[in-house]
Image 1 (cartoon, rainbow, N blue to C red):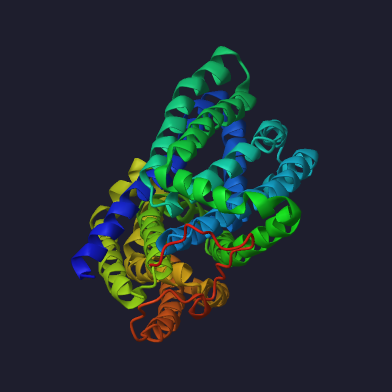
Image 2 (spheres, rainbow, N blue to C red; image 1 turned 120 degrees about the vertical axis):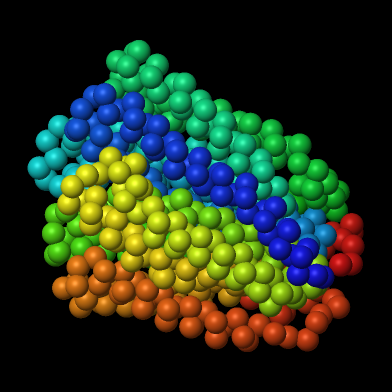
Length: 471
């Protein structure tokens, strides 16, 4: 398979994911814009609630990401039983995880608000509690949407999740003023508008699942071959499906949570420099999301592409990796040049001025080398996720974040440039580790699909399907 074909397929899969991720960030911005009319306390409440939701995303990534890889692998193998098992495993995990988060979060909404705002949150504490009283039970919808997206992406459809995200944001844009101001529900109105909008998008997602040709044919073929033996083996097969999905998705979830936690912990280090630097770091980090989301979109595309081809018995990880590095390096270089040229304008666009704007512009201009390395590491990680090497990738990330914090503390005397230097040095070592993993992926070309070569099991708990065709 040619390099151009790999590159074209990666771009085709990645750009809808990027727009979907951008749409997710936009939802929080829309809420903030309308809530800003209620005062600073309301803004602070919604801001911290949004950060908590972003952290909770790492929980459901166990189901969403694991399902994506396993569905893509089964699609490549043209194995309807394995695809049905992958889909079922994602929903079993959702059913296990969601009540713990939704019900537990609702019961602990006030302590949670106090934890993220501090004991002296004042009005913001009460407002955050009100927001959590709606948003945390509504996490049920958010988690279900993530599983639906994971199934569709594994089936090769990244455009429908993008459309669903845009639909949800469009509804939030219309419902926010109605519930926040029109019905005078305040921050609770923002939460209600968000949950209702996501619910409508989720319903449309279920319709998309039903209409997806790949999933429908796989379900029909699997049911035809397994109906006679499904009843006596249902409980055991559900448990096996859930374990398989969890084993696949947990390292990816750990990778995401480690990076999020590291970014939050870095705030404490930056606080040693000064208040203006903390504000600048917070604003610049949000501006940086525009670039980093492109890296994560390419990562998802690489994961889907790699898993699909491995399922078909074609180990082309090195070829895919080369194209991923080419695309990621180009994106990282574009980000570097953009931040060098437009750092001050970016800070002013986010409403900063004075010392905060100056510190933020300096930080963005120093961040370029780190972003180039980050782009390569994140995007190439998709090849290992799709190939079953995500546990090793998660270990590299956890060690890298720990090293980053230690270096940042040691170099904080240099100000924000020292923080950037620490981030770049830690990321350079992570890139060296993943490069070593990448060099080990070269193997003789395979003509048959061999599950034993892969670290993610794709066994068929309900028995082989009579409709399975050779890859």
